[in-house]
Structures are given as structure tokens and as C-alpha cells.
Image (spheres, rainbow, N blue to C red):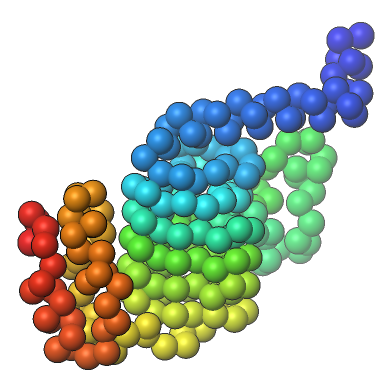
Length: 222
């Protein structure tokens, strides 16, 4: 009788909602150092997010022991971005249909395929509706255009877009990148951020601009 009760659709829905509520609460307890919001349940141990990062987290993971999602500090994640760690169907077998999972009623590792972990480095901006597939590293300071599907690594400070995502350009002159690549927002104290605010918003057009700006920055870890 009890088993039949839990099979009632409205009961199953209520239980799923409760489980999700508990999961979101646990996520926030573990992530007070950032402003991310879990939009679905996923293995807590396979997702790590850095300081001050904000946005929605849609994470698909069926093989947590084999994959990991690492998101750095000061990352901007727009709504409806999805991180797909696993979930690819087998492609080199007779059928792509997840037969083992359907027959058993439970997920089977035989039906999913992953290329490995996803690493998002510091200060990345991920645009609305982007999809990040397994096995990629998104470099520091890069930009993922809205709707992009990322299937390969993204260089630091690059702008990529499209399906599949392709390199568009660097968001600043290439000679500037080595100058600024060792400047991390997370190294600045709150007071230092306020003192340097105008410099943070100063456009960089050349290597000389970057070198002058770097000399003017005020922080202890310089």
C-alpha cells in the first residue's frame, strides 16, 4: 500500500519539490562565498565554485566519480546556461538508445559518455543560454557569447560564439594579455577594489596602456 502511495503522481511531484528545496538550501550553505543558485539537483561533491561568482547553475552529471565542474572566482553566468558533464549517448554502438537505463528503471553508466571535467577559470562571462560540454577549459577573462555551444577549449581573454563555438577575437590586443594575465580580482581587498575602481573601468587599447595601468594599481599582493 505504501509503495502505491508513493507512485501517485501528485505525491511524487511533491517529494521531488521537497528534495529540490533541501538540495538548494544545502548548496547555499556550502556556497556563502558566492551568489550562485542551483537550478536542478546534481552531485554536490563534483561542483566547486569560487568567490563572488554569480548566476544560475544547470548541471547535468551522471558519472560524478569520473567528472568535475570547477568554476573560478568573479565569473558572471547569465540565465539558462547549462553545464553538461555527461549525458552524451553512446555513438559507436549498434543503437544510441539508452536501453539499459530504460529496462532497469535506473541510470546506467553504459548509456552515458563524458569527455571529462569542465574548468571555468576566473573572471569569465558566460552569455545567456550557452551550453558548455564536457572536457573543456574556458580560459581566464574570456567571453562566451549568448547561445554558444562550447565543445573545445577557449583561450584566456578570447571571445567565442556560435554552434559549435568558434574563436571570434581577443577582447583586447594580444600584446596586452601577457601584461594583465597575472592580475586577479580576487587578490584585491574590498578597500583596494574601491580605491582602484576608476582604473578597473579604464579602457585598454595598447600594451602601453596596460603597463601604465598595472603600475598604478594599488594592492598588497603586487
